[in-house]
Image: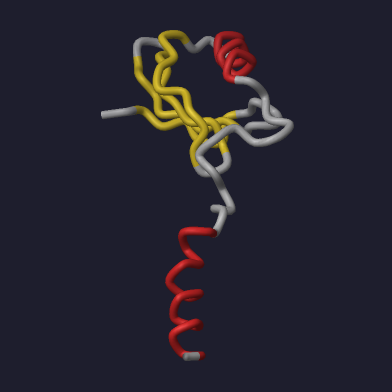
Length: 86
């Protein structure tokens, strides 16, 4: 019986666990609109697919005719990744 109870806890644990880095804006994050404004201030336009992902904002934007994949620090709005998309 103890083994069955232990097995039930082991199987249920992943379903009950909260991910460490949720795919939703966290407390004290810049809002999506604030991030868009910061990106516009940096010269980016056509901002799409902006969403919370793995502890940061992530999206695509155009600058100088090139589309970039961006990762944005959720607290400062600074870019942590800026790679051209192919």
